[in-house]
Length: 182
Image (cartoon, rainbow, N blue to C red; front, side, top):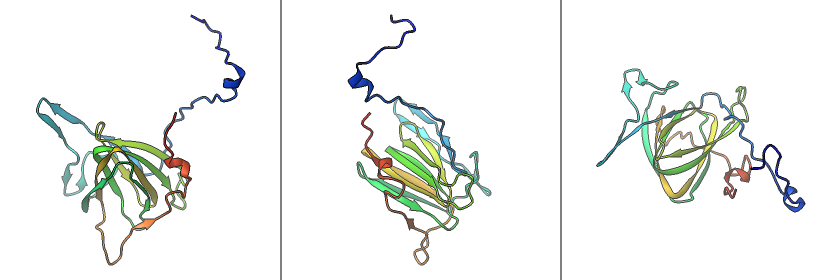
């Protein structure tokens, strides 16, 4: 046991060394995550995603009044970024199969969290609901097994007047999508 003395590295390695940092999760105004419980048994599993009443969704950290539900299937490694809604359209995401590496960036003028970038992982193994407000750019990369994404919007898609804003995938830096090699 070395006691309280730090280990001394050879100079060739000491020059290359970086130390990992663990800052808190950056907060984006209106973004929230609610963990879900997957109830497993010997013959399968059950998970409740959302309860609705006349007022909309119940038991969520913030309001969400679903008007449309959709499913998106992503092939392994699929990069889908960046998407943004300029009209009022908030989304609620839940990964049902596979894993998504998600990036969110607040682009709303006047927001307290303007420019804040946040990454998170949505996984069917540890299911959660992710709320994405209008004006927050969002994108994902599917994991090695691909992914199935169930999502709800509080506005219906209108093909005559679509709210399907796009920003280039590298608007906030290509490094966001770089493979983690460390």
